[in-house]
Length: 381
Figure 1: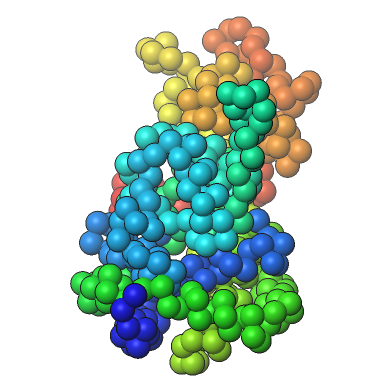
Figure 2: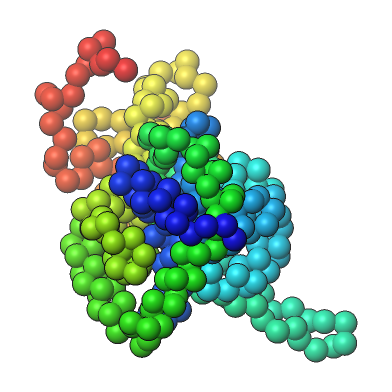
């Protein structure tokens, strides 16, 4: 609908002046490459303050394919898991676009929905006739936005790994109203032209596959994971092809442009994140390790080498943060973060009683330089 020339003029200006805008268009177009390149569905989540223009950004991504009005092509998070599943199956190879994460009905449990949507296969359900309904499937990119990250500190590594999270530290567009108005009046051209160009110039997706392979190798050298590099390589390949097919502006995204949005292997590892949380929690509650009869709750003992954490207290810290204590302790044992005598514990005398403790080594890698760390009164924070 509308005039492709007007949309293209706006899109070229966005590509020239906004990295976020280039990413949004490229991610939207990359959706049709997921299935032919044998990749898995993935999320791209834009988050930041209320004045960043994130909803307009989703309108831009939606206008590539269809009417970008909310309620037409764009959905919201205010739906059930079944509703999201059916929406994904309906668009199939086109991007599923969902606005406003903060209104999700079950924000704290969204990890499960991330896993389900990124698998590309819905739940098998029976019907009243005694048979089984057709299992819904999809193979696409899922574009979302919100005022907060889509993952939390206790999110599983699998969920974190499936998402490219883009923090919008500046406004997406210099003139968001112009972008929105142009998208609302002119839409549905770029996606069709992109697919038609692929059918004419790369019907077997040979070029797309070669680009994907090249970008994957470059991204894998950036200390990221396979799934992160898979998703971003698809976006980069789509952007390169779109520049050839539609834009002709010489502004194809490069791996270095998107490096800040890739999670490292450490960021993805749930045990790495849990370990950092444990260390910070122990340091913040150091007084609970003092040999003082006046403390309300004793967590154990501390010296220059170890935190001797009472086993039940350690497990409680993990549970409260949503981590698996057993999984974390197994990883800490394998990586030399704790000292053990049997299982994951070692006996320590606390307040005159011998109890099972987790001996957390303060500096397992020998990298802390205490002389470089300011005292509390010198710390500017």
